[in-house]
Image 1 (tube, rainbow, N blue to C red):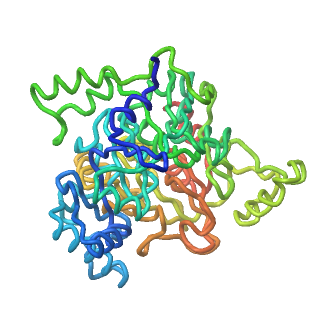
Image 2: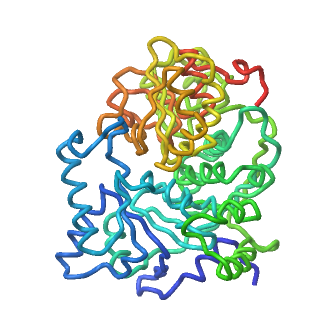
Image 3: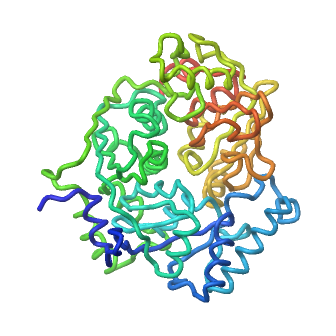
Length: 470
């Protein structure tokens, strides 16, 4: 019987079915973080239960650390210090490795897990963070989970879920200059909406996806959750296998050969059916930017804000509120608006190729007067690799702040946030009201538009700044 890639991975990990109809899906590896781990550890202890597979369980300090050089627990907020202490104590008590601040492999879990080979094609992965779906870029089936689900995974190594429907988004055409994975993702969300993938898993396919570097595929899958989907993934191919080969936790020798033979079968059958199938042409895709307060309120850099008066009655109030919050007039061009702050980082766009793109634009230029520009690598390894290439010097010479690996301004946590009324260009994944600080106005973009805004002081079409050539 024909099967999708989603079916193949799901079915191979189902170990039972609950009376309520939910499947018990085995989780190969999972990563905790300091915001949810303390509560889950506490609930386990009260129930007298232990972590079933501490060897498959890991803890990452990523959400709350400051990104400033020389950071320590001492310059963290009081509540953060308590959360960190509780996670470390619970991890030690249960024999769980912690990727802590001093660890050579420290960083955002969704960046670290792929780069060390923790997550592999065809595997299942869980994190108490909605952007667990990032690792779908390697062909893994990954789930964000809440504290109750996390407790269940810690105790049983399984997650209880109803199997969602299958959705395929086929992306065709060759990307133009300065358009990348983030632009594809924002285009999809603007087309289907933030609830378009609700009740579905999404498989991304098509020529435009195959042409993406692996880091771009991770970016695309990172935003599947913003489409309303529980997760997103891309079938692995030779580019995937070459990217994984030699990573610290990847199989070696004969085990690699066996794994590779299995991975090559990880694709949807040609006659497999999906519950929903969408095709998007990426040939003429402009660099994208959000104008409003959800990731679906996006368009190309040459776009103008919508006029609520011409929208269907049921949408007018939402459009008016978004425009009012963002300080944008109906019909106003987005290009040219003054920018106060730029953030390049997060699990969406803080890998080495992202930083290289931004550095190409910053090189030989200066951050515009009045702009606060921050670059935060996604992991300690990304930071080391960037510094080995001299990217940190490029950014510093231009006037950017070069930070330590962390989630940083993505959630406006622990000191990294915008101020009321500031217009921010951010390479993160969410632009809700107050997301990056009370009253802060966030525009989601890729690294290219972010860097272009930093050096011009306004929302700028990077194609014009750079003469069109990528």
